Image (cartoon, rainbow, N blue to C red; front, side):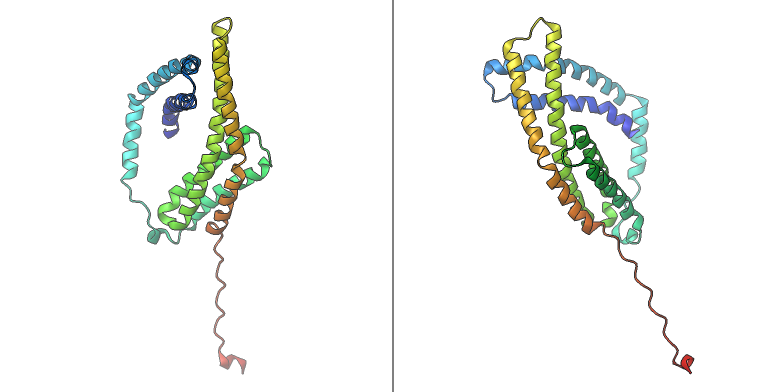
Length: 244
């Protein structure tokens, strides 16, 4: 049900982010170029209105009301405390399993992974962080360090993905204008080119940062998720009389 809600909210959020991003990028353009930029993103406004209508319908549905009731029931349960769960290794095992999954994916990705692979690594990093947040009330400060560096990795990979998506979207918007008229205005094409160039530069910059961010995650995970050695049993005391 949370996945359903996310799919209902996601399109509006994505379009809001895209519109804000393109407005921010064109803020230092001259007046004529800003007008051209607004002409370029005109279709995004129509898309957002349609997505917003679908979102509001979902939020007004009985399904959403039932989900709110289930969530209210869930948060009434007390959170685990370190003292109550200090002997529950399964919490660490959950975090360790997600970390190992991410680590294997990083090894498979290689030195220069495609954009889609970096996006998949971001999703795996998100799973690791969410699992760590689930275990944080019980595991305390050590897992907080892992959450911090994992969030930094997510930020780098997320910015890379946003830049890739923005560049593709700008090209699609320009293609849409080409379909609506014989030829887009030259200034609109010029502005689109400037925006794509900026997104490509941002994608290249974040691509150069992701491995360093991953190394920080790996280093912290090696400390935080190191298996606790099982203590060897103490030898049974020897009865001196048994030697006679």
